Image: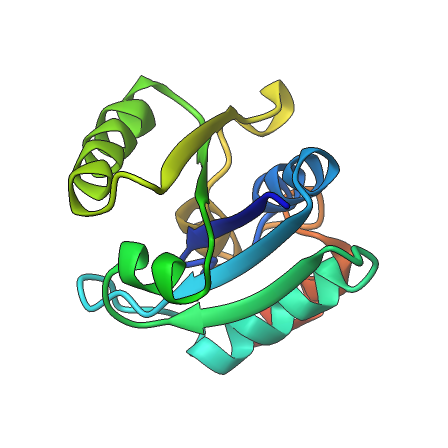
Amino acid sequence: MSKAIYPGSFDPVTKGHLDIIKRASKILDHVTVAVLENPRKVATFDIEQRVEMLHLVTKDYSNVEVDYYKGLLIDYAQNKNISIIVKGLRAMSDFEFEFQMALVNQKLNSSIETMFMMTNNKYSYLSSSIVKEIAALGGDISSLVPPEVYNMIVEKYK
């Protein structure tokens, strides 16, 4: 059985994130979408809100679960008996960072592989930061985020 983890801050979840989740769930037996509590980032949405958003957008995927973690991703994956890390890539800049992380993770635990998935072309410009900036300035984010979380995000910026 292929068990994978798709980690991220998901602050907030976007249609780009959901695209990777959908595609990964089609080719892998089980996908854990795990929200990272990242001490290097100040989150707009707390961990509970981000987990709730992910539950809302993944409720129809029987092989997808949502969780959160602190600490090293590789330790979390090992503790959960997960053998694949899924990373979504939008651009070369994403690849450089994620490639370095994959090599570090491989050094820490060579039994866990990293699988890179290119984002769908229509989401290559999309990031949580862009969504937050547009929402903060009163712009329309309806085409950028799943409808299940639209109101939660808009309310945050009222």
